[in-house]
Amino acid sequence: MPRPRTLRARLTAGLVVLLAVSCAAVGVAAVVELNGFLTGRLDQQLRETGVRFPASLEHGARPSDHDGDEDGDGDTRRQTVGTFGARVVGDTVTNAAVVGSTPGAGARTVPLGAADERTLAAVPPDGKGHTVHLAALDDYRVMAVRGRDGDVLVTGLPTEPVEATVHRLELVAAIVFGAALVVAGFAGALWVRWSLRPLSRVAATATRVSRLPLSSGEVELWPRAPEADPRSEVGRVADAFNTMLGHVEDALTKRHASEERLRSFAADASHELRTPVASIRGHAELALLHPDPVPRKVVRALERIEAEASRMGEMVDDLLLLARLDAGRPLERLPVDLTRLVLDAVTDAQAAGPGHRWTLELPEEPVIVPGDAHRLHQVLANLLANARLHTPAGSTVTLALERAGGTAVLTVHDDGPGVAPDVRPRVFERFSHGDRRRAEGVESGTGTGLGLSIVAAVAEAHGGSVALDSRPGSTTFTVRIPAADD
Image (cartoon, rainbow, N blue to C red; front, top):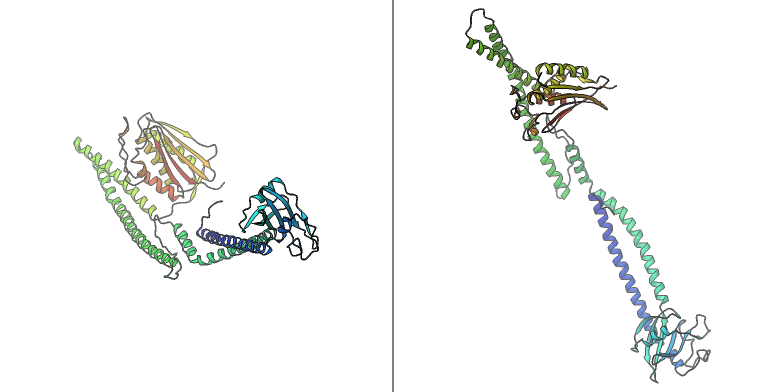
């Protein structure tokens, strides 16, 4: 039998079990007491009957000799129907008779077997009642006393009336207690349900709160547990739960305000840096175009200034994009042929990494997704650039695209050294750098550590996700984006 899981079911089951145990105890006590009482009455009746009936057998008279003789010792009219009498000499029953079931029928001889004779001979002549089973009759309550001639006179009454009364009580008790258990079970379930309604409301409130998105953005924990009697356990739980929700809401509000300030700072700083970075890059390019002879060291310095300014410009653009995505600014939602973007991205990757082997796995039909074509191309470019920078020359990079139901699944797989275990948990965090020199021949690269974080942010902005599965010799980035309807 499965154990009840809810508190309501356990309480109801406990009440029913306790009531069942109580009913069983009352029933057993009543049956035992009634059986003892009726058996005592039977013993009293045996004592009142005395040895008149078996005494008539002591003189060798036949049971029918005294029928109708009210004054004789063998008169059975004053004996209860079913009264049994026997005379035992040594281990032998010399006479045995029982009063007939019909009034006036007198007594009849009982043919006893050897087992019955041994049973009667074993009854102690102590004048007390003993229950025996006689195969010729049935269960009897017998009492034995010593006769005048050294024999033992046994008188008995049937226990069938007592057993019938006890069995009837057992049947009545079973029916009454069974009905009481059923009624108490339903009534107890309703009572427990009504008593636990405040706790159920607290649980429902906790369930609603657990479904709220608390990881980012502005959070308002509007659900509150309904107030209950503060003197009760449920009332104290509800009050403590509401207080906890208030503290959590304050903490989340402060966190959101801090995040907003950080996003605003990143967006403002990125926006303000674009102009001076572009100016530095422009002046460096202008100086390199000067017609007069320029020392080689100066040219090298200007080239480095231009390269770093270009890199800084890319970083500023990436930071500005992340700030806009964090602020929840919507992207374009136009039909984008992801298959064409994959072809263009692999062509660009082949030009940037001719030392790698680039393979494609595309479906027969184009895969269309609603989204921003420029940002999705940036996702592909960042994943391919990450594979190129983190794998040695000669590695194979496979870009696969398929449609699984209503989702476009894009995977970038390489057979390089894999992502270090300590880097995997934070690989999609901003400014997260892996060890690019962990394998011989791996390009040092000049990444900013924002590429994979942009991949994750753009995928989430499109309602998708990105995952990593990496081990030595096999690294796979999987991007899932909702596809357009057929």
